[in-house]
Length: 169
Ligand code: S3P
Image (cartoon, rainbow, N blue to C red; front, side, top):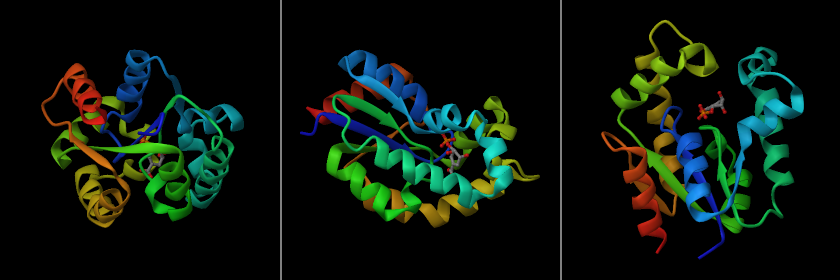
């Protein structure tokens, strides 16, 4: 079992919340890739997206390369990390990759309660329809890169964390 853990999954599946608490429980360091990008640029993700999605994806690739040597970490990624195969090859090499899965209804609920303006890709008139569309395209990629999967619908944070710890053995 590798000592780093990476959390992937669609927007609104709780990657940051779960990652942070999982790191605490396992006494590992916590890394949030979106937060690293925001700190480096001094801009929120929604602003970076104003320069185009490519700009953001480039920063995402740079950040993955910069954490390649990290040890004893839980790494939470942005939902689109799986769009780049090279990102995922690095993460698979250095960590166990855990996928958080949720129904589109759960995702919708979380996105709306966070405020959809925080998620530029879903800041549309009909976010549920957008979730469906993006999810359909990405599902095979999430499946391809995950070593473990956890369904989060109707589960508490503690239940999810216990499940992850059990899965990792
Ligand atoms: C994205 C997800 C976001 C953030 C950016 C793009 C995506 O992170 O990286 O808005 O493409 O799914 P969260 O999954 O933490 O919302």
